[in-house]
Length: 283
Image (cartoon, rainbow, N blue to C red; front, side):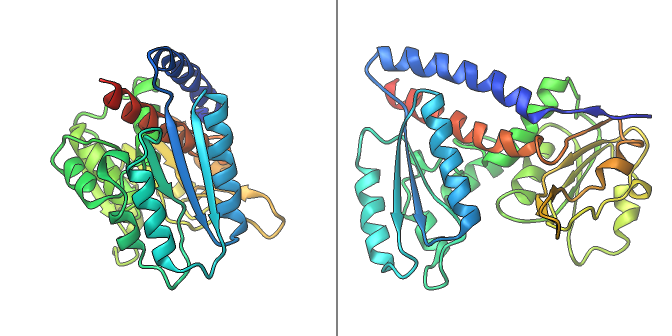
């Protein structure tokens, strides 16, 4: 068996074309979707992520603002800026690039973003709405994964779904979305005993561990759909996921590559959330 490749670049391109059309229609009514991104510090990976988000906004016809601070900035400066952005009618989405420097309380920063502009979906109010099955915003990476399932016509009802990782950003919201799609969900983590026992019975396997090529072919049920959320840099500089792509591709029925899989969809769904916030604001 050779797995079908779930191409994140192609799906993202199709979705972004639709977003651009919707953004143009909204602008014709006097509202241009606006996203503000705050970056604290000089982390190279964060700088790349922020640059990609700002560029994606420009390509989709959105208004975007990038606000950068040195790593030693006083937290109150950032809180004051968030209050200003919360009140700015031209800004529909706000995100603070994580991780923040150690002298910041990340939870407090996320709570300072107005829930109606929290396009990352990390505010406690939005997390609660997702738990209740009525999300205002879905965290971008799990949202992108669900788009893969919908686009590929993968019916999740009654399927055994296993999520590797329990982070607030991916693992927990991913489990909630799969549960709401009527899958039977198991969440595995660093304390799970006999991890392979769980992965081998998964019809749907989502890997979000942050361990390079951790999931091997012998851990995967033949015919499973495998979603690789991980992104890891190898000693030679190349990128790879949490899944041994070459081996697992011979066992799975469908798989996302790294790069070119979930990554492009994460930023795409950030655009989706920002656009949806602007459409709500415009009525």
